[in-house]
Length: 60
Ligand SMILES: [Zn+2]
Image (cartoon, rainbow, N blue to C red; front, top):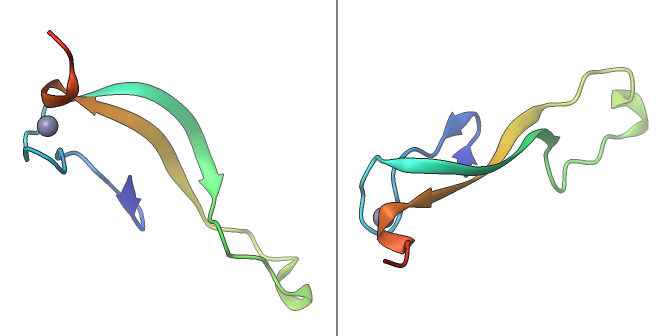
């Protein structure tokens, strides 16, 4: 998860920073950001979309 280009690198449950990359879907277009006819010639903003996993959510 990111907030406009700042990748999440801290677990939202335990605040640890040891997150493991599980799945990367590359850069994706923003949801709910449809272009108007005037904006079609402009480039669209993309952000990285990935799934990360923390040790606190692993079964042992
Ligand atoms: Zn955690």
